[in-house]
Amino acid sequence: MSSGNTLDDEDTFKILIATDVHLGYLDKDAIRGSDTYNTLDEILKCAKTNQVDFILLGGDLFHDNKPSRRCLHNCITMLRKYCMGDSPIHFNILSDQTINFNTTQFPWVNYQDENLNISIPVFSIHGNHDDPTGAEGLCALDLLSASGLVNHFGHSQSVERIEISPILMQKGNTKLALYGLGSIPDERLYRMFVNNQVTMFRPKEDQDEWFNLFTIHQNRSKHGPTNYIPEQFLDDFLDLVVWGHEHECLIAPTRNEQQLFYVTQPGSSVATSLSPGEATKKHIGLLRVKGRKMNLQKIPLKTVRQFFIQDVVLADYEDLFTPDTPQVTKKVEDLCYAKVIEMLEEAERERLGCPLTPEKPLIRLRVDYSGGFEAFNTSRFSQKFVDRVANPKDIIHFLRRREQKENIKGLAQTKYTLLKPTAAEGLRVEDLVKQYFEVAEQKVQLSLLTEQGMGKAIQEFVDKDEKDAIQELITYQLEKTQRHLQARGVTTEQDIDAEVRGWGMQAINRAKAHRLERGDEPLDPDIASEFADVSMNSDEDSVLFPPPTRGRGRGRGSRGGGGRGRGRGEFSLLQI
Image 1 (cartoon, rainbow, N blue to C red):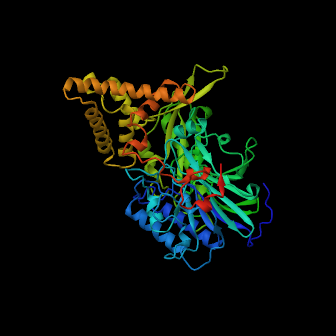
Image 2: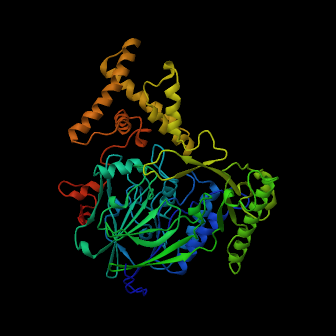
Image 3: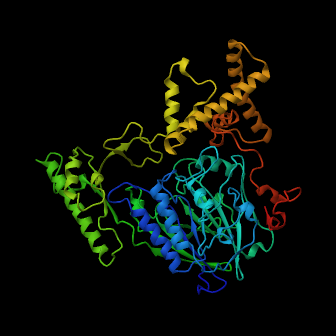
């Protein structure tokens, strides 16, 4: 990476970068309820102070899929306060905006709207917390987009193929291609990359003159075989990738030696879990781009609540106590008290001279009580710090080490377990549905729907508060089945049962045959069953509700030939 000429001139893009604001997190908490609002205010104020060209958000602006009225009100108020005004916009958009913003009835960038007075445009993709749901596929960002406050881009409407068209910008002699891809379930996106179903378009003319910036919101660290997106999946013509979703702040750009692009991970601006990754100091980035050179300046956030975390292994304190020591539990509690006091004193020292930093920090002490020790009463312990910490109810976190016998290289591996694990810990809603039907009696098994489809609908109901998700799935599948039976002329109850069973097997066979026709590699049974379920139109997100018509996205006209007439001239800037 070269800093080049970082002087702010007519050829230099200045972009404020932030991800995972999680606006509205713990909205009703008496102590932490305003944390996210204070930090968003600081981010927007920083953008205005530095006179940036635009703000780029990497997903999860909102913590909840359906933000509260307070949350939406505060967000709209701050965007109007900092992003509207008379300051001129110094860059132009060259691409076909009907393709870039194809999910809105106002398919153009907000600062070009004659009814709005925008001084700082905001460009944002959606994350997994504020992703589109429901029959219309809308999310909270679409409300801000319709009101002209945010430019929502990177929304893929197809589950069969993803085509990413960049927003082409030019400031002076600098050309910037902004790519974006909103959050998609990692397993599905991984599979689509493997099957070459993801295409990124490039400017047709002067490709080497464009600085290619891509923002994505997916798992970067590996959580399973396909539950993440490897960096090498991304195209090698990119210059910088802004990676959202991961909360640990690793904002300094790191070079991918295989693809030869840089990756910056700004992290979240609020701690949504008491884990080590969240304890890293929070930053946002000020990106300067001139020609093909860039410089990223990290800016520390001052309104973020302090978070300190320590690990204590009781077996390491043999000089103080052992499991057989008299009143050992009291001595363990005294040790933990001393550790918490140390973190509080450190927080107080760091807070000196920073009036914007909240007074009460977050404190987490993870206590490994393996080796015969016993846990003490955490509720009573927490009462000692009610007035000094922001999370008095969960300061202490007990865990126990368990040796794992099987291991590939013969090395000792350690696995930690929680003191009081919940019954459903680590399970997804669809997993619970599947478990239920595995042990259920035959008479209550599903016939028209599949377990995966029902699991998806229940997940929408629980996680996204889509109250009609289950009803819409059932209604849609029922109407589809009725049309099929009418077309086949089936009338008797016995024939209906036989036809429904046969129809399900035909759908599975059609899905397998379709894959063989394409020459695809055979899938493992789990994934194969998922594809079969998709063919039965009851399992993918898009078929929880009536599916969209084909060709809804306008990106396909870029391949030339008989493309659509709308925006055809400008769209010739792009090619695969």
